[in-house]
Length: 246
Image (cartoon, rainbow, N blue to C red; front, top):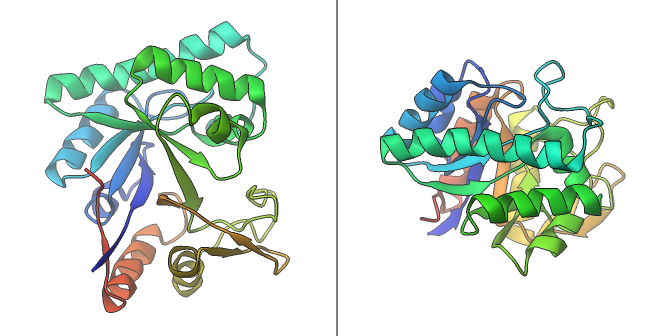
């Protein structure tokens, strides 16, 4: 049976973390920058351990007001300090619980900017190297950060099952009405194409090549639990198992 790796951003205060946790391979836990706090990090780590789900850090710009989805004009040193502080908080809790942090995935504006801005990408990579060089970086294909990081840390290319793409591999802006894919049948069609044919059909109909190692479903996407249950059912019918790497 073939295996597919599905990750989900959790610990953000959403209502469906427990249901999603039982359906995925890996979780990316908010570290207090855009969402989350010490108690929520602890609860999410314990849920991940119970479900044998890989645990990752999900740091962001320190901006809960905008859920980390807007760029902040802060110095390089302050941004690096914030990223490291966020992840270290998660690492400390994980260590106390006997859990391992396996990967690192920036959130929101930090993720998108690191994909195209060499300065931001370098700050993120330097943060990982300072924290733990064994952390796996989740990054988009054809991105500056993936190219910058690949000689220094392990990189997993990530694709999104619930987002439409532009031909340059960037995500369609959330300001557009077609940014999100919320119908479960369309989500499956989207991810199955990426997984089985290595193709992404963009919003303009153009096809681009996909080499994703892991696929992300946003926990705050409408009907996220129903979508994941449907994906699991459809994958099983196609002899594909949702599985962790570890």
